[in-house]
Image 1 (cartoon, protein in one colour):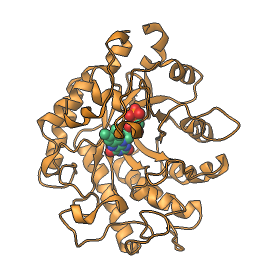
Image 2: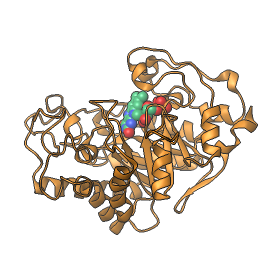
Image 3: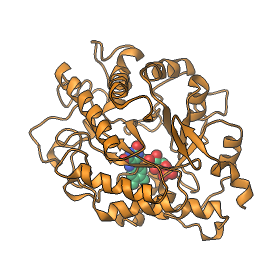
Image 4: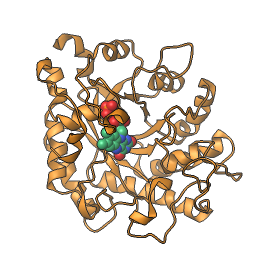
Length: 367
Ligand SMILES: Cc1cc2nc3c(=O)[nH]c(=O)nc-3n(C[C@H](O)[C@H](O)[C@H](O)COP(=O)(O)O)c2cc1C
C-alpha cells in the first residue's frame, strides 16, 4: 500500500538540514564499541539504514567524557583515543549513501554504575544525589562539576560537527543527567540549577546556548525529552500544558531547532481532553519541528520486548492519520529498524509482506 504512506516519504527541513523523508532511526545503544570506539561493523550498520530510505539517523548514545558519563567499556564516546576519527568514518559512510546522521550525546548521570566502570572510586553525577527519588546515593554536583559537564557537552557537539555529521541530539530524556535536573523529584536543589522550571531547565539551556554560540547558526541542535522516567513509566514531569510550556521556553530561547519527544507508544495522548501526543503538544506550544516515537510498526512496546515478548508487524494507519493532520513532523523508529535495516524501504515500496517480527534476540547481533 505505498500510496497510503506517502506522507512519510515527503521531504522536511530542520533549519538548513534537508531530509529526504520523515523517517528517523531512533537512538539505540548497542554496546558494540570496544574501547569506546565504533569499528567498521558499526559504520556498516548505520550505512545499511542510510542506503535503505531512512531520512535521518540518530546514533546510539555517545558519551561526552570518559569518566563520569558512562559505566561500560563497550559504549562509544567521542573523546578517547581515535574515537573521533572512528566516528568520522561512520559519517563518511552515511554521507556516501546519501543519508543524514547526527550523534546523540548522552551522559548517564546517576544511571552510571561506578562499580561497573573503570573509575569505581569516582561518584556518579546528579542534581541532588538521587537515582531514585528520596534516596541520596552521592553528593549533589558542585558548581564546578556542572560547569565541566556543560563544557564537555559543548566540546562533544563541536567534535560531532568536525567529524562530519549533520546535526547533534542532546539526550535530555529517560532520567539521565540532563533529565535528572529537569525532574522535580530528583532535582531538589535550591540554587540557580534547581527550584522552578527555569532553574531545572538551566543545565539544558546552558548546554544549548553555549553550543549555539560556538557551532554557528546553521548546525541543527535537537534535544530529546520524555515525560516518563526510567524509575517510573507513569511519571509526568509536566503535569499540564502550561508546565510543559515553562519547561520548553528556556530551550527555545537558547536556540534549539527541534525537539524529539520520547513516548513508549506514539499515539498516547499527553494530556487529558485532547488526543494530541507529546510531540503534538510540543509542536503546538513552540511551533518548532518535533519528532515522535514509540512502537511504530510493532505490536508491543519496548519494555515488553525486554521482558521477552515477541512483537508482530503492526499497521501504520494511525501514524499516517496523525502525520497527515500535521500533529508532528518526523517519526522515529527504534526496534523495527534495529531488526531490519530495510524496514523503511519495505514500507516505501509497499513490501509489507516482508516485514519482520521483533524479538530480543535481535539485540545480540549488529546487522
Ligand atoms: C536496544 C535499545 C537501546 C536504546 N538506547 C537508547 C539510547 O541510547 N538513547 C535513547 O534516547 N533511547 C534509547 N532507546 C529508546 C529508543 O530510542 C526508542 O525511544 C524506543 O525503543 C521506542 O521506540 P520503538 O518502540 O520504535 O523501539 C533504546 C531502545 C532500545 C530498544
